[in-house]
Image (cartoon, rainbow over all chains, first blue to last red):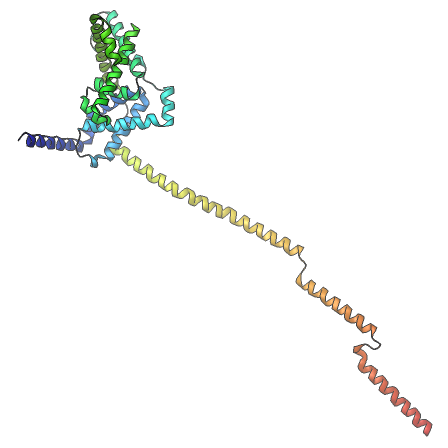
Length: 192
Length: 155
């Protein structure tokens, strides 16, 4: 009985995802900031992130007929973005751009914006400093570690969802996340 | 592993403070990234539908270029190389004509040699072949004259 209910739920979710894809403008409106955020956090290159976001939705548009709703729309789009990012990092020219960081996102862009209204200027300065330090530390992570970290702590995805998106074992995802946190903790602790 | 060992090695208070600070920093980082992405998401955007149409047009133009460039190249090569090759061929043929003696002249020179040989052989003869019938006539004439002379004497 439970199995039948589970299957029905899965079919319903699948149909919903397929239906959601039918209105592509809405899909872009909802998921574009998310994909851009993931690429921006992973690449720290504004131009590349914007280009790849555009390309991600173009690929999704071209492949929309093949989408069967086996995964959520967010997972499907993020997987496309991850593949594009890997291709981008693999290509020689992009490696060059990655190295030179011609249009890299300025750490000040990030740290200048502090969400909650902190009372004292000291608190604001301290919060900015922490964000800047974390930004630099994330930049030093390996590509896999950074992807897992961003998907978990920026996109707030579940670990099994991350595993599905990155096509990794759950244990591999946990291992990358564990190492990433160790590196970040080490860097953040070392600065103080 | 290293992470766990470090955590165990440090006093509990420091570790939890560090973790709290890291968690706070990650929370700030997440909020900042959301804000920055939202800000950049407002930038110029081309709808995928239009982009796909443009992309198809571009691919078609690229295919056409792939076909047209070699075709034009081949046409241009044919237009330039063929007349040049033809011209060169003609020039070589003309040079060959100038360099080689004319067959008629060869025939003439052979004929001259034969003619000279023939003349030479004719001259070495007492009576040339061409004058042989006249020789007969002169002999015949001299015979008649001697006969007439004999008759006259007899008369």
